[in-house]
Length: 254
Image (cartoon, rainbow, N blue to C red; front, side):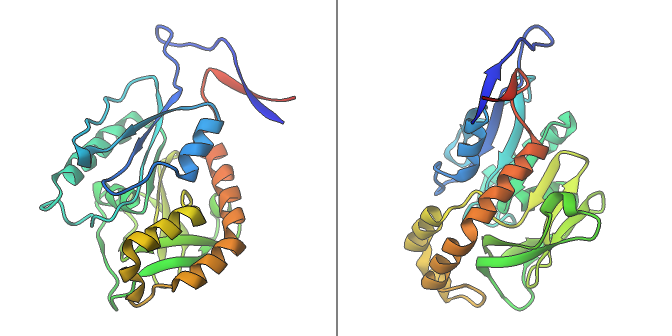
C-alpha cells in the first residue's frame, strides 16, 4: 500500500510547494477525478472560480502547480464573460514561473490562445461528445503510451501553438494534446470526468446530444463501463510525470 510520508524538506524560508490551484467555471462540479487523485497524493487543493468573482492567487513558492478546467463557455466569448480574459492574463503570468500547468478542454483552449494559436469550431459543425479514440504522435509515447479511448464534450478545438509540440491526435478534431516546455500541457479531452459526472452533464445539457457528432446517452454509458478504468489509469501515469508528489513528502511502500 502506498502512503505519503512527510520529511524535512523546506526552502526559501520554510515554504513548501504542496498546493495545487484548480480553476473551475460557473456550472461546474468539484467532485472530479483529478482533484481526488491530487488529494490522495498529499496535495492541498485551492479551488478558485473567477466566474463567481473569486480572485486568482499570486504565484508563490507554496503553489506546486495549477490546472484550469473545462466549462460551458466558449473561449472566444470574452466579450460575454470577462473572467475569461482575467484567466488568460493569469495563465500568461503563471507560465513565466515555469511551474506545472494543465489545461483541460476550455483550459487547454485558453492556453493555446495565450501561446498565440487559434481556437474555433469544426468546419462541418461537428461536436465531439462521448468517448473517442486518440493516438499518440510518433516520438511522444511517453505522454499517451498507446491509443486510448477518452471522454470529450466540446464543439471547438485548438490549433497547436508554434512553440509547442503535438502529443496526441484524433479524427474529427485532430489536435488532442500539446506540450509547451517540459511541464505545461493542454488537452482537448476530459480525464477528470467519470461516468457519474458525464451522466450529470447529460441530465443538465442533454439537448446537446442532438448535435452532429454527439453520442446518445446509452452509448456513452456503455462506453464508460468499457473505457473509464483505463482513462483513470492514464491520469495516474500522467500525474507521476507532470507533478509527482508534494515536495516535502516522499512516497513509501509499506
